[in-house]
Image (cartoon, rainbow, N blue to C red):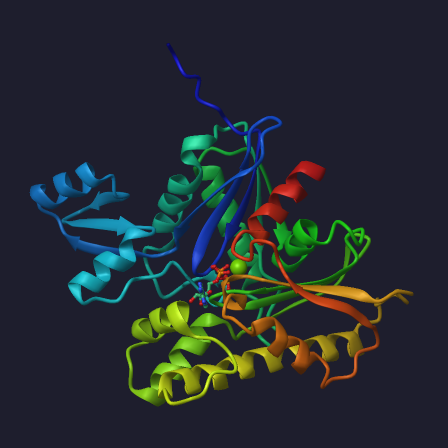
Length: 335
Ligand SMILES: Nc1ncnc2c1ncn2[C@@H]1O[C@H](COP(=O)(O)OP(=O)(O)OP(=O)(O)O)[C@@H](O)[C@H]1O
Ligand SMILES: [Mg+2]
């Protein structure tokens, strides 16, 4: 019996600072979502290490006298070896300080998509909005990602703004009218759309990495340690017998307040904000929204600013870690 390998016609790709997520669509079946950590670590190359990694099926490749382990396993490997992971992206864009960023990101994308795609697969990848008040490295980031995807053999490549992708994935019931927020590792991306047309998009240069390094610096803990504690046990409204929890709350509040103020300011300055004539739903996605109590905290912060539109509800995305990739897939399917 031969099992035919399925090749996707369309994929949505979320190229995030923290993780690369692919939403793959083959025929009429539901999308398959797969992800890898956007990180790598290099080890000295020995035949034995190579064979062990091969046997365990751990994504890696040989580069000179080094073996590079990339994706999900890189974090554990780095932890075992007492090293920091290296990251191809920082603050939502390619990391110019990391010489190997292009090569490694290409390998990670191949690990996420390779099995399901061929050169005729249509790819739509996410790009962040320019940071509020920051300089614009976005043109370079987007053009380089496009080159990397071309290098991988894809021919039909397009991009979608991350906040808009969240709206595509989560706000169908409101006819793609509303506010999409993605709280990621590097950035928080925000988009406001009216019937799927973006009217405001921006990003805030504060995300999970900012929270982790802030809390690490005031507690004297390692950044990676803080990140693990945050992901495993942090929640809002706790009692702060624990210094790390207390510091995490401070930096989380700072991030939330930057998003809410960003919304107020961009509504204030944008000439193109239509008279919506209805209250807008706001949907929260990205790994940063996962701690218990986040939604309530965000809603409370939102009530402290006055916006020129009413908010009908604040809710979490159905799958916060998948919303951008699923939205990018929707964008590709709708073209
Ligand atoms: N269970 C969890 N609780 C709290 N935080 C979490 C949890 N899981 C992941 N995170 C945090 O979410 C962030 C990553 O989110 P996400 O995968 O959405 O980012 P990204 O899309 O890769 O980054 P960006 O969009 O900024 O480029 C990290 O800061 C990570 O520590
Ligand atoms: Mg993201």
